[in-house]
Length: 105
Image 1 (cartoon, rainbow, N blue to C red):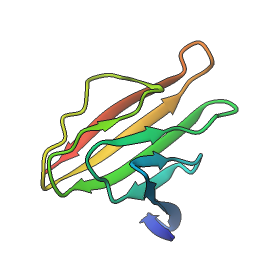
Image 2: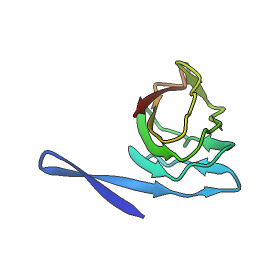
Image 3: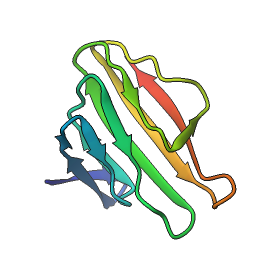
Image 4: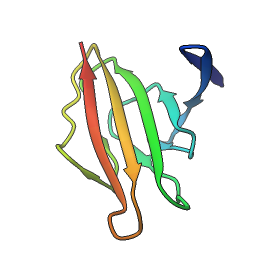
């Protein structure tokens, strides 16, 4: 499903993703959301160049989430009842995917 985030006068599309068999496959859409569950593996798309993806979710419980293709600035420690934003940046073939997490209480 698609939702919209309004920033100023422009609406930005937020794509709601579904987890299947503990795998969340992200698309190249910049803004995405999902209902996360424990032991989810995040698969990132194959980019053609610089790509930025923001994944927003609320942790209903403490979670362990992995993303094997990303290099994390710090390993995410996901606690119950907090909102998170994962930011994935694809720079180029040499650097590949970088990731960091923002936590909101």
